[in-house]
Length: 114
Length: 121
Picture (tube, one colour):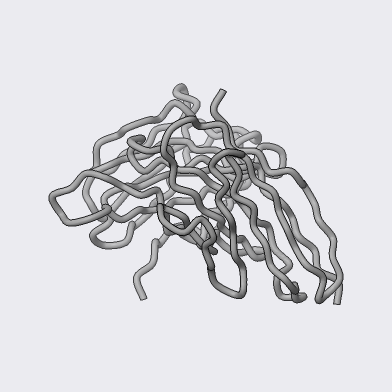
């Protein structure tokens, strides 16, 4: 079945630690890729997106993600996390020609200790 | 600042009652999505529309849920009758058309509303 998998359900880090959240998808064709963030009690907001071109994309707040087509992966990274990065992070895939439908992974909850 | 607007923000109701949630997408966006978020299931796609036409509602329990888009500025999600297992946060999201107004492509980039938190007792 077509799906989006996020490797970690809950990640706990100390401030200034480096972050990498894994995301793999199982769609075989062309896809657009996204990471969304949901701060506690808030709605989802776009962190970054990949449509084409340079597979290393930079988003807001120092986040970046790398698309590795051969591995069907789109991992999110940040060199040094802050307490304010505490949130839930969702990887999402838009399979080409599916009307803009966005399929989400199950989410990774990030807790950053001050 | 353009945003997706959802009402109500919070709703507490009793089992068996009808619940209607409303969404005003961002002006000019041509896709509207309804997602449900729970701790157990995460984000589930319930239904979505493009140019007001329903494209997929396979994620919705058909016997009690219905989604409509009476005009370009309003999408509704109705539950009748509601059950305790429907308790969740319901998000509406809208998406822009990729390219110019004559294209039908959508990139999947979505803008989410703040959600309607439903509690069914």
